[in-house]
Length: 112
Image (cartoon, rainbow, N blue to C red; front, side, top):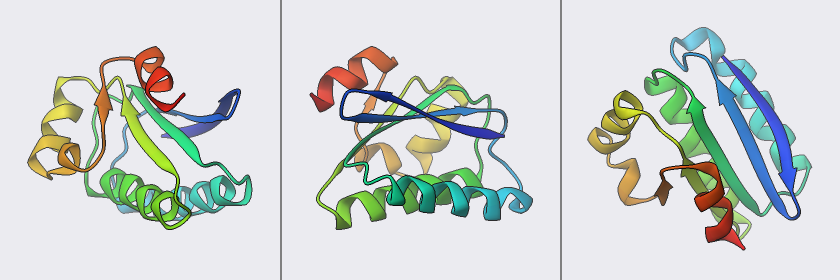
């Protein structure tokens, strides 16, 4: 699993790839969340297009970002989840909290 940062003007894009599963990745994800906070991002898109599967570790990462961003009056949306990821997001009710878009361009447009 990998999380890279990209930027589109004032929108921070989290390019996520690989399986977001197993607890061993929790420390890496915590550090990436802190880095995101340090960059002062207020509008964030998690691009899930490269994520084939997500479990509680990945869900925890998304919730952590959501909590951090909301605390700073920011916006956080999801983009491009496949059917498996969408199912997990739906089962956990995360899609009722986080706006979810079919692709990255729609998600970025929603934040502008």
